[in-house]
Length: 377
Image (tube, rainbow, N blue to C red):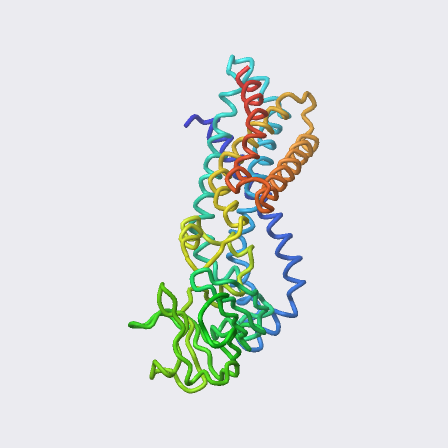
């Protein structure tokens, strides 16, 4: 690497570090004071204020970088080009017969490095901290009741509902389970005091153990419910390991699935999402499917953003740094709005998830091509 290439690369990463630290620090300060009372409540049971804050915000640095890496990389590249232009370094470079694309090359290499780290961050680093990222300061220990999202178990046909869930105990409180329509059974639903999710053990599959069953009142003498695919509900009359007023529902829909927010999928790797799609009990909506396709498109979108933004700076005669950054921030806003609109079309079912994820790239590739032509010209 030439000396000037190293100079540009060091300048790029210095600017990127300063910008990211400033934005991330501002986010943390504002968020910290909003959650201060919740942090203080946690320290009454566990740890110190500094320790709890460190545990909460450390993985969020990675999440924050994932959200703004494209913007920070673009602003850093714009700053470097504007800086060498303001210092008249470009005049000397042009006078030496060096083409502008030779100056842009180390900056593009730096952007590719950031895009590559972004992939590692999304697929390895963030998923390794997923449990800490979805941890809520209002329910730090998972002992409080959490709103349950009624969910249809596609594998068994049961509709899972209840009052709430306790994540730490893997329990549903006051479960109200609707049996699948058309099934041959003497009752239509199951009402109990609680249902605890148990992992598979021996010959017993994973599922919910319901205790203190009040509906049906004769659950102890009821027969197992089955269909052509196997047992759907296990009762005490056929299984001695079940206590009175209890029953067992095999299911692969966990308590975490019943309380999971759509935003939690952002913290999962692409492999984890694809494996989740294979769960026969879950019916994943188009939002998660758009997200999977968007993972593959994101590095190309980051590069196309650079190819659109840098020519704007090079073609602008005034070397004003703030004006150049302002133009590119406006470009990023338009870029994100277009991406949001395309993804919304996919999540709402107007287009397929794959097309919704790739559509922004199709829109901006012509502009990126024009930008590359200006640089080579």
